[in-house]
Length: 231
Length: 405
Ligand SMILES: Cc1ncc(COP(=O)(O)O)c(C=O)c1O
Image 1 (cartoon, protein in one colour):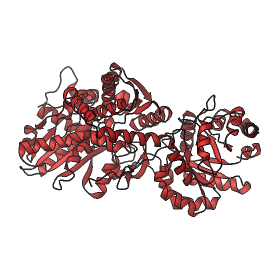
Image 2: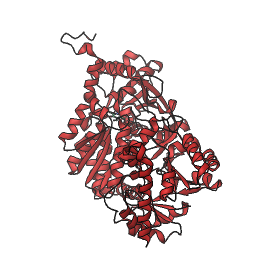
Image 3: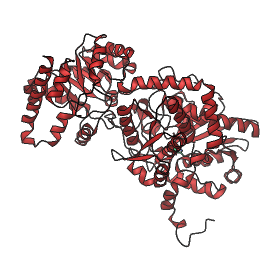
Image 4: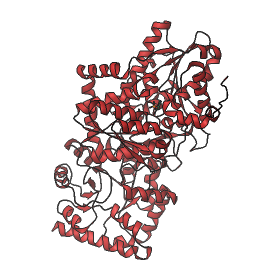
């Protein structure tokens, strides 16, 4: 985490693994399996957040699927999240249509709710989803599961442009972004770049003694790419 | 009770639409297309023609006299969905949705399958309508339902083995959803049970409603009265909701769903969602879910691949909470014994799934009065399960088999 921050990350997502991650590709599926095998729970991720907060003020978004959070209890989670210094939430499979109870519990503690928009979202939906968002809006770059890809999807620009009509919030684009050039391309239209699988893959494949340096370098490259894109 | 789901797909608190945003607009489109098709006479006429002349509807209602007499209670009637083309009720829904897919201009169909019956029905419907078909199936299920894998391939479908998790139905649905999320613009997801995000539970139920409607009519003609109880096995819940629906408004008719009791009461050993689970979200719907205290989905077990799933269809959760339907479970050994009994007494070899419903009828019949009627949905035939029967009934599979009687 410190390495990412040194590399220039502005926000970090802390994931709670779920047994059936339907929106994730192989890299995050494997990571979820490893995390579950190691006994990761909502409670343990909250504890990790608390430890990060002891020496860092980087904003933390807790991201997962709905069921672990529902089981833990919305109010209880919002309260504990506030205590340990978490800033917001992102639940992959919670549609805004079903989100009223969750959003009111989280907002009652003054925390943010980030929702996703996708290339398939109609204008009506972009407007609706934006109303449920605080902090930032997560723009899914393409139809598909998480995982790196060669090129940034051509859906990104028109989607971001459509979404700007409905919100003043910063827009972060994710799904498939892995290198500085892609970050630059996204940076030229959006406010932020969200990188998941590329880091998770690095954690999976890098020897432990080189991991922190690798993470820091990746973060720095991506950040510079994104800033270059903004021009 | 009959006024469900609401416009958001809720059956009381259950059901709904819990999916990634990518799928929300496509589900809206699907819902609109379905409502338009339902109101379109030519769509209904084409489906009715296929159900009659291709699938074999209406299915007979059979009075199992020898079995009823032996058990010494009311009359047991079987609704013979096992006689349908491809061998189970699943074809009702597969034909309906495949026609809908074609109407929506989708040429690529994906499906999940557990026992393989939905996969076979989908592969069959796709062959009939000239659609491309890919079926996801857990590797454990491919092993135990080998015959159906081959049937799907013979009909031109591609069968993709899923190696994640428990390698059963749950994992096959997850993988089908990943495909759908990726190819949503070109692909129709033909879901095989009364599960998933709205409008699937509604649509699948509607395509199977003919089961109960026919049975109700047939009983009224034959007996001049309604059944005392209607019994069906419940995996995701499609054959059961198809049977139940025509009787929900008939307060005198007991509705009984039978879940898989597996090999024991321990989590992981069964698929009894009501006794062992708690409300939660899986694959797009909120309903009773087998899960651990951290909200991770639990593993399940059943001798029948088609009942081996962690979530029950949301309309069943609603009927359960209202007390309108009652849910029990039946373990592997009891289901197996019921299959043997039905084969010997009536010459009907049931699917392993359907055997769970048969077992419940056998259990209840002696407690009923002679003028009671037990209506049982025989959702499928046992051809696909012959290997399971052989494995468990070794005494019949030797060169000098034991005499049955
Ligand atoms: C013959 C048969 N009955 C029942 C089921 C269970 O499904 P459902 O609960 O949707 O009817 C299956 C599923 O594969 C099946 O093949």
